[in-house]
Image 1 (tube, one colour):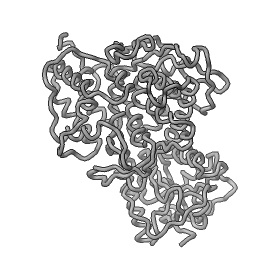
Image 2 (cartoon, rainbow, N blue to C red; image 1 turned 90 degrees about the vertical axis):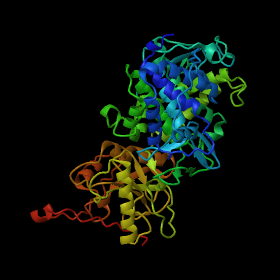
Image 3 (cartoon, helix red, strand yellow; image 1 turned 45 degrees about the vertical axis):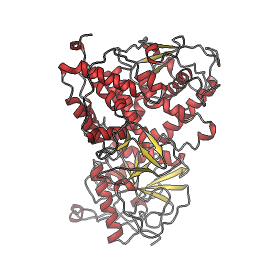
Length: 591
């Protein structure tokens, strides 16, 4: 093999193997960096600096061989990601600094123990991200959307047998077509114990790619056929773990604990992440964030021609202002972008296919042994339904600990759920919309100090606050009476947009969160009545809130109650029209 023929992609893949396999065991007593995404990006940049083009072949070969010695725990990952074997044994892998080596040893493996979550880092947008599924997605993306053909032979169900899927609701566009440069892998080199009779890895014709009509789950009136292929990108990031999480039986389908959040010990130098629910599913918010990021970035890499961007640069953009200058393609909007990338029927087929693949790779798996294809299909359907409805279709909400909330003063009063109203506000002050986590979190702390120290209230008044950074911020939350709409605080949730919306509108992402996502998820969770009504603050209290332009828009929304007339006092003189509206003084019927 000529080292001069190695492509930049191979260099990048080698770098990923260091992060994904070689550094799984940190040196004892090694001091590590803060658990920040910026630290992961720093590790990538240091690795990239150690790989000059003239030495790429030797370096990458050594890394790959070292990584193969480490291995991964998942048979799916081993089969789909560790398939390339290079017969080169020269050179030792270059070393990272002790700090970065220790960091990558901590974050390369996702796990949960004693209420703590490990293998996660804090991203600049305030979200917590599991590194393992992120790296898996990057590696799979660099390989291309490699398609694994599944033989239709099955002892459980004949090939022409169908399985009926329940209605999954509206779906978004399917996963983007795979790159035509699909990598072939020798199955025997990956897993010598698996017969190629059942698995055919290699390039396939476009009509069997995930996302095509033949591979999507069907509507309730038709029968869904057995999956014929899986996409390694979706399987190693999301589909495989979704299926495994729901294998325990129907009793877990309605109480899966999907998307549990947690709190860092500190935000400036985070070291420990504690889950809010110690009994949470392994599919925490951090894990699902990492999985979605891996899918989105892996898909991007698979469609990007050579030379591909350095991974440190790509991650800096994705967790910063946006990839290739696109502010919509960044971590803040991972849920929206993930929903647009793959449809629920496609994901259902991928989860089902992942379970079939795992059943053949690991016949003695305790939860898969003896399961029929119909049972696997049911697991896949419910796993996808739970994920799309309870996570992907819900807004990303930063908990109070994430923005640095001060404690509640006194004892909160519980709400009698479900409530029947959603009251919409604007904060007026701060007037500029916040477009970053740093700014939005500072605005939240500022409003809480004003409400507690100046107004003498127990806490920030709003139930939730919506930034222009793609996130919702928890105020008093779903369960405690707020101080937002005088005389009505116990009857509805108060949701405020950060900013003054007298003459401008909030961002589309912020509007979508309040119009669609927040109420839909609250109804599903039994927190908001299905027949709820939406009102602007001015319809119940004599105020200019939520601003003229925003209120006019609210009046066009389906749930807006037009029977409640605004109580705003109109100012007649031209002098008064030039004055800004008075600062909104929130009050409460309980104080």
